[in-house]
Image 1 (tube, rainbow, N blue to C red):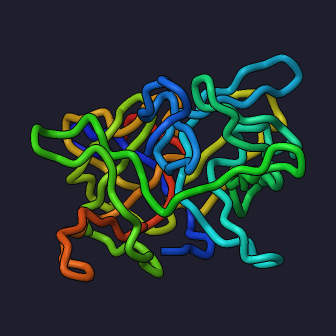
Image 2 (image 1 turned 180 degrees about the vertical axis):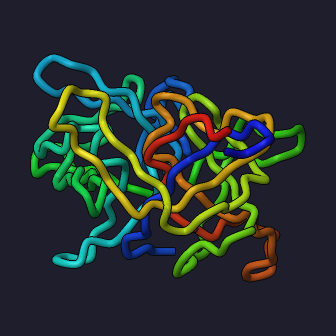
Length: 237
């Protein structure tokens, strides 16, 4: 038992990573994300008439064709494929692949032949301290988190939260709340922040990253290095 209250988030491993305006009068933000779609956006899936609220993760390249897609947590579509995804009033894509088992909780969102989608290498980061940018450009990825490392999470409900400390690289466990037999994912990294709720329902899928501000091609860029993806959260005491 720990003597101090913490809130914990569970982070899954990375997939292959690649380094806005809205249509006609509709405001573009995290809750209403048009093309090119950003990570950190609020998304909703519909599975058998049941709505699942989650968060988009970050853009990746599909191995088979090199096109960009977006990751999120696999349980956001109940690990089912061909599930429609929206962000506010905008079509966000469809779940092309999804896994929720002992080794992975991850899903891949893509466009469809009739409704192609464009995904950007940027993530929403609004909701932080004054002066923080509302979005960051993804500059790269880390191979793995490091114990003691401070990271940020950017989810639909919690929005931007930084100074989350990586506590463990493999002790995390996530299980669905259904009766037995339940699906669980093991070997997840754990992040904690004292006296702070790190994640809420609907933050699942959120990008976990380290902010990096640097000059690129002569211009100041608010960047991010992706560490992983949040898949679950809860108290750790």
